[in-house]
Length: 151
Image (tube, rainbow, N blue to C red; front, side, top):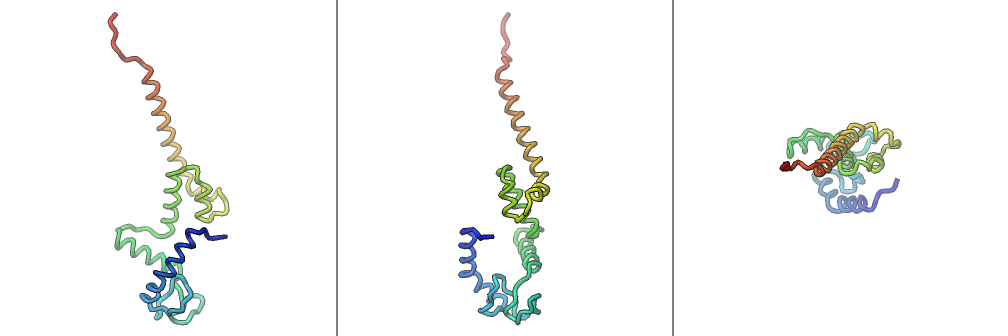
């Protein structure tokens, strides 16, 4: 799967500006090839990397994300929940964007995406129905003459 140009641009900025800071802060070797370098004194990860050349596993990144989110925003969310939140936000804005959410979340079947967001789709449908009902009622009420006429 190809990476879109915007993501490539962001990765280049990260590699140029932030990766050296990350490497320094964890004591990783400057020639560490990983985007998320591990600390020099940490035990080797699954790949058996030498000290300073390892990487942060996804569990460790998720743990750090949760710690920082709690520290700075008092929110208890993990990356997995944030992933679903992103899908929900997209669908709140455009309920017809189910295939976009499918692509972004990497679901091979649209049915998987639909099953995760079926409740969201139902809520959006209810809101739209109530909005249309309200519009129709207002339109009908405009046609009714409630004036008092002298007979």
